[in-house]
Amino acid sequence: MVDARAVLTAYSTGVDPRSEEGTRPLVMGVLNVTPDSFSDGGRYLHPTAAVERGMQMIQEGADVVDVGGESSRPGAAPVPEDEELRRVLPVIGALAPHVRVSIDTMKPTVALRALEAGATLVNDISATLWPIAARMGAGWVAMHMAGTPATMQVSPHYDDVVAEVHGFLLDRASVAAEAGVREVWLDPGIGFGKTLEHNLDLLAGLTELASHGWPVLVGTSRKSFLGALSPERDGSPAPVESRLEASLATATHAMLAGARMVRVHDVAPTVHAASLVGPRSPADYPADGGASGSRKDAKPVGVDR
Ligand code: HH2
Image (cartoon, rainbow, N blue to C red):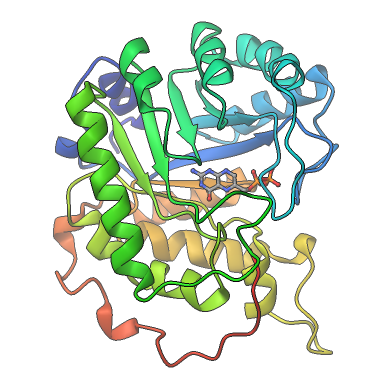
């Protein structure tokens, strides 16, 4: 098997990621240094706990550790810049010598300072920070979000969610590449201003997104649409701690559909799944992107991340 880290090194030295193929899909481990993230909030707020968790994820095979200091769960309150910096910088400084680190932020100054502290990838849920990635020679993830975390789940509406999200991402990728960003990832933003049906349509459309040649990142891990998809015996949605199987199933679907990286809380089992998926490239899959799997007829069960 090709060493995934070698590919990442190639990325950060400027190799066009669109030409990359032949490794297992990459696994990005989620590390939220926050009191209020929807899944791991409060567990890694202390820098020592966060660094320990990061090192554990490295041992479990994470290719990237995604450090965030502000929750983006629906309705989350914004965090002041100095507080976000205080949370993430020591953790990034400690982990960056050992693994590729991404910074999950919407704030330009936080992105900049994180890159100076050793991060090499900006995980940008606002899809606006490409000028900083260009200036610093870093990679950039463009994620689609409808609105802001405060409002995004109020009443999301699209005429054609797949066309609109893909169109937005491809447009941003071109602008960023034009501005000099040499590593651009596209992420449909599962749960960010999307109903359950929107999320399923976007997952069904992943092969189409990957077919454009930009590497695709997908994050479904533990999100609440999975709770609705895998209800408890009494019909209530599975709680966050009971979403491992659905997280693995959707991550595996994403990898088989051509996603080159998945963003997850449960690193070890996802690395295992990625190894089973093995080397893939979007060219291995039919051009219709599994369109027959469209969920246009699916019954919406609520507005939810
Ligand atoms: N999802 C979350 C945060 N950042 N970044 C990308 N690129 N893609 C995602 O799907 C994504 C993301 C939300 O998950 P989490 O970080 O676990 O929760 P919270 O926002 O509550 O901190």
